[in-house]
Image (cartoon, rainbow, N blue to C red; front, side, top):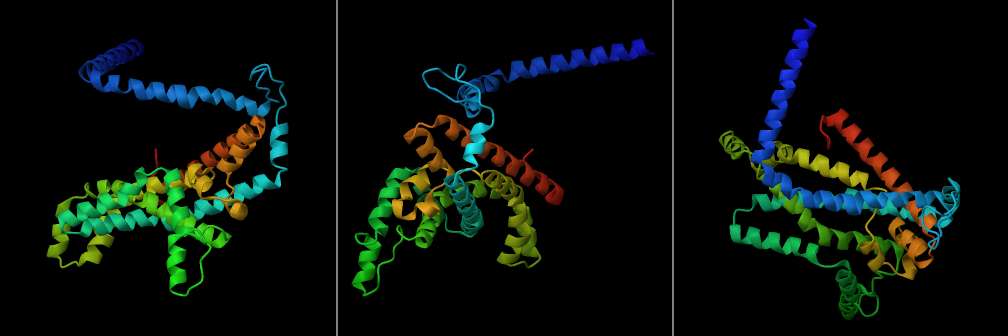
Length: 317
């Protein structure tokens, strides 16, 4: 009996190997296309992970990573004793949370609105106008924001003054800076996010809308009962990814929009690491902060995915 079972297992293994070989032979071009992305990720994502050990060493750039003395978790104790670190961490969470609450729904709303348009030329034109800002560098956007929103010389405040109104300190008062930060971020990214949801909308069966028309459903009913459930998996995946980024934040946006007057609310982890690591050459502390940020982000990502699977039975994996 055992011999027969072993023989069947061997035949199954041979059959599986043959199927894999045939698949590889048939689709070798597709596998070949994966080589460059894999090389990219290995060289620029996985190999640099070796530098993580700098966080546990008294790093000296002249001695190198391996020759620098080992100090264990001493760097993390120093980081957690810094008031500036907690300020940057708080600002990172606050700005990311506001982005999640305010900015995340905007692409969904825009995608649904564009999907409901029936005039094709207007729909295509509006979509192009919406996603063009995504291709503008944040350095240019920062210059545009300064020209438009500066308190004394900005075009917006010049127009307000011409009507006898007071100038609004968009970039110099903490509250107004946060609002400006969110508004500019929405303008820059909403159009690109809309494309993702429009792509998801194309996968919805049109017969469902026709059936809803027969049943007498109005537009709002069709949006609520057909459109929203159709893009729900995409929304959940993007929401999980955004929650996973709660502890991390892009460098360009807060850096180009920040100024010394609003440092209390604009200093985030990425800009703090830049000042500590690049400007002050404290590479050990910068690496420790980066590692802490990555670990917290991973915890957020896995937690959000776990909760989503428990509630909606949907997740990233």
